[in-house]
Amino acid sequence: MRVLLIGSGGREHALAWKISKSPEVTELICAPGNAGIALEPKVTILPVATADLEQLVDLAKEQKPDLVVVGPEQPLAIGLVDRLDELGIKTFGPKLKGAQLEGSKVFAKELMQRHKIPTADFGVFSQFDQALDFVKAKPGDWVVKADGLAAGKGVLMCSGVEQAEQALKQVMLDRAFGDAGERVVIESTLLGEEASCIAISDGRDILMMASSQDHKRALDGDQGLNTGGMGAYSPAPALDAAMEKTVTEKVLRPLVAGMAAEGIDFKGIIYAGIMITPDGPQVLEFNVRLGDPETQPLLMRLKSDLVPVMLAAIDGKLGSVSLEWDTRPSVCVVMAAGGYPESYQKGKPITGLGQAAKMQDVVVFHAGTSKKDNQIVTSGGRVLGVTALGDDIRQAVDRVYAATQVINFDGAHYRTDIAHRALARLS
Ligand code: AMP
Ligand code: GLY
Image 1 (cartoon, rainbow, N blue to C red):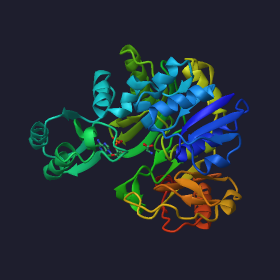
Image 2: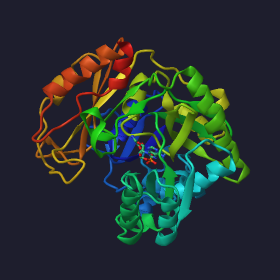
Image 3: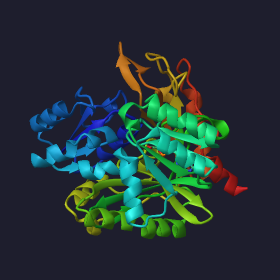
């Protein structure tokens, strides 16, 4: 069977690596892919941008794949799945209505409120003065969130009314995130440990993936600016079996049932960003695609073929499949370009990839890479996701950092404390 994979990041390299191993797959077409994806077996790269809806539809019409897998949120938010469904092309991912779960924070919060899914108290505003009155009425720590997609940057943590006022000005008046800031969600700050709970939905049933934890801040000790994610590991001890059961029963099942009751047949990934608070799990956000970099350690642990599971989700038959996981933990460390998450340079030659690839239980997933004059060079902010399995979390961490040490490019930086929460639990 022929699969078309949309996307070009580390998540998509992990997907390509996994999908190309499926005995059912004869050809994997990736648009637009990256230099690492291009090296996987069975892969053909086609240069179509993930933001170009019409070109993606044309590509699918031309290629007639048996399955389309959409990696990032953007094509979902512009209705790619709806268009491909009209053409009778099987596509893994939610349609436009379901993709609002990530595309609009107002939609997600109001849906959670209607279906009694635990999440922080909040208000929704489209008028600056009213938003300001709201925070002034209850001084404290607030989180100001632009309603729309803002590449993970539209969430501002504010301690006190003054910071909240600045954040509201930035989002609502200065339009720092463009139209995404037309409306804002203001919610109370939750304290606890964060974890990523990722499940597959067929519109009725859900199938949990293994737990994982991301590291959003740029610097060690969870300092510095927020990023797309600087590293992740799986499993996350904070999401033990009991907590996972609570999240399934209090969040994921009511969510899928609630959407179904409102006419949304959600097929694809539901990623719940959870804060584990003393009062139990609370939802911080939903995403409608796999996490990046969480996918890299997750797929390294996944023993089952993912392709039949994605097809079962599309066909509403998730009940007939299961996922088997390697019991060994895995860790992914993101190597980023100098300057990231602020402006950074591109085109830096990368060395050591061959040596790292030979290391035991290590896979180097590419994110922002491309090929220039027969050499692999940097072409994005997050450049590589170096990932390793170990007999225990300590060994996985040691292996991953041994691999990052043999890889070099000008300006490379990465966090040296990925999985610190899991390691702290060992002592
Ligand atoms: P979001 O995109 O909504 O998940 O927000 C990005 C990050 O902001 C989360 O991963 C959290 O670290 C933080 N965050 C969002 N909402 C809250 C909240 N209500 N309380 C504390 N931290 C939050
Ligand atoms: N790693 C966070 C995200 O994918 O949104």
